[in-house]
Image (tube, rainbow, N blue to C red; front, side, top):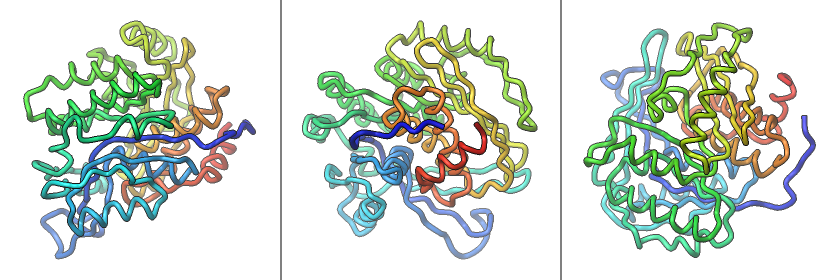
Length: 348
């Protein structure tokens, strides 16, 4: 374990849509039972909450309706330490989604209801990016925001333009959601354009395969002794970096779901020509895997700033953060820095 600590707080900025998630209780299907439970979430909000929980300064940028539901969402984030000074207010509704959690051999199911949401109507020129990014170190965006509508895609590229102009690093989560791309853009071409402009990125193994249209060695671990085909992965990442030379850190999460409550999780980090592998975590007793990728992204962002000279620890930190998210209900990862570092001690 490294003893490196951050010398000062770093401001992160995340940009995306806040959602309200509805689920039935006790693993019921949507057609069962009388009551829904609700939780706020959304990929970029999840990253913001995780960073705030880890002690970082973070501003979350979105657009919400000026209604009790919209204000409750902002209040929820502020109670968790997220800065909401630059939320834009307007539009008619908050985006929602309905989730059936996995159970036994039954896979999870997600149904989106976010058409014409307040955030889907955000346009370039609405957000004061120069003011927001003036003291920021990292801007985090994801493929979900680019998928919602043409105007949110345009707003994403506007944010990238300001980040480049102001020397702010860009972090990108592929977050490919096939069912969201309905406005006519080519998702692979659009996300590759964002990827070409980022400095660090995250995706799961399936998303990596999709965006580069190339198969990789499968992760089929049934226990922690599984042997990774590192030479094949090394060639694969080297080729990716040649196509997207600006990106200096590529984090890929890998999961094998043995059952709904037992997942094997690991990750690879390619950074400046070096390919690192993390331990394999055997998570027996998964509570809620929603937001696990966001926990990966937030863990990497925090660790890059907190432990800048230790790439291996950055990888282990991101994986441990994601592993702990599996034990926490809801979209938000509320694992603390102390808990993450304690888990790392057990594996390295």
